[in-house]
Image (cartoon, rainbow, N blue to C red; front, side, top):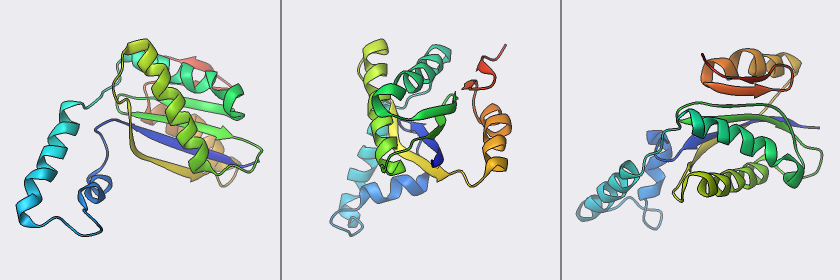
Length: 163
């Protein structure tokens, strides 16, 4: 059974490297007269930038946990910070990690829209990384999630909320 760390970014918080390809028109960089188009695009993203407060973070964790039966995965840990969502998951069918990540992103987006109103919640950026061994698995749950996130849930410790 593969175990993966799936990471999601809040809308508008993608790295510069992730943003660059969005401004490519027909596999070619825009000519100088179209540069304002790229600037307008960046401004539109900036105007809708999302940061997760405590209520958002708790809801994000709940949504990842609630999606387990529908999407047939097992969650070992999930954490949410002001601009990130991380989940350590496993599943035993032939789906690839990108497909599952997309399904979870959609489920979380729908749930956040229902709870807090319609807007883009999660951006296109993020990562899908396979957990290599038990040592890395333990590191993710015991060190990485506490360092990267504010609220988190792990199978061993339950919900941890900052004081």
